[in-house]
Amino acid sequence: MYLGLLDRVSTSMQRILLIEDDRSIRTIIALQLRILGYQVEIAEDGEIGIELFTKLGNFDLVITDIRMPRKDGNEVAKYIRSSARAETPIVAITAYKDEVQTDLFNFSIIKPFRNEELIRIIRFLEHAYSKEAGQAPKDIQQVAIESFSDFRKS
Image (cartoon, rainbow, N blue to C red; front, side, top):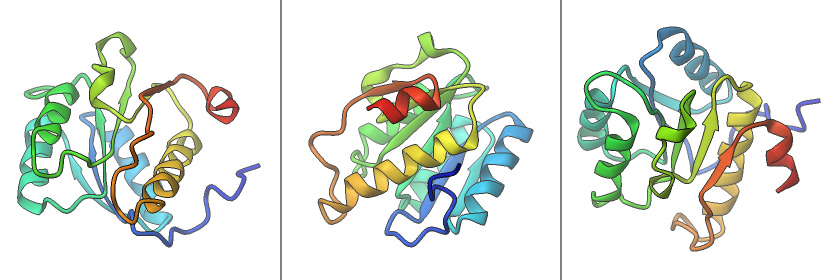
């Protein structure tokens, strides 16, 4: 059923910054990730997300909505890609796939999605990044995930 995706985490990709303006989505994702053992910091918009990324700076992964008040997810990704931590993996979660600037993101997931889809992407990134001992792999492709079954085929 869950293919081991919901096992507790034991990896170097522990710290996640979650940026989502919808409180219910933010709460559900953060709760699921914390249950799995990830340390999650949350921001309700891109401006706060950039602030946290700058101040705390040691995130292993950023998950961001695209359409948000103040600064959107594309602006967040542009900031990260121009920072000293430019290789930080970024996952976009959005209901507006045409608004995603895909060259800025490692993955994008179209809402609504199942939490297992997001966990599967995180586990893939953990595996891919661990091969290079914490360095971003050269072969990460920009991928738009529209359904869990599409991801399993790749």
